[in-house]
Image 1 (cartoon, one colour):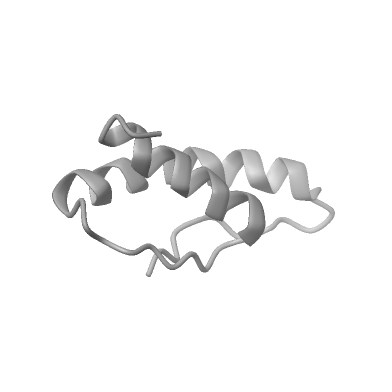
Image 2 (cartoon, rainbow, N blue to C red):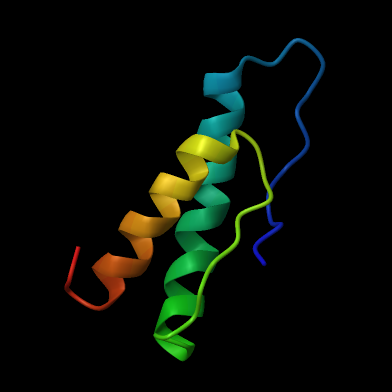
Amino acid sequence: MVAAGVNQKPGETRIALLKRNAAVFADVVPQVAHHNPESILVIAANPVDVLTYTSLKLSRATHGSG
């Protein structure tokens, strides 16, 4: 379960939140994939749809299959 990320600031757009949370995921997801290549990631952070796709790409890039 990946529940990493930052809280949305009042008035912050979805895109701005995405940029900040994507930076967090860029640090966390490759480490998880490296240490447990068979892991199944469940994403619980917003915007969940885009961060789920981002996590897929980041985890595959770690193992050269993405």
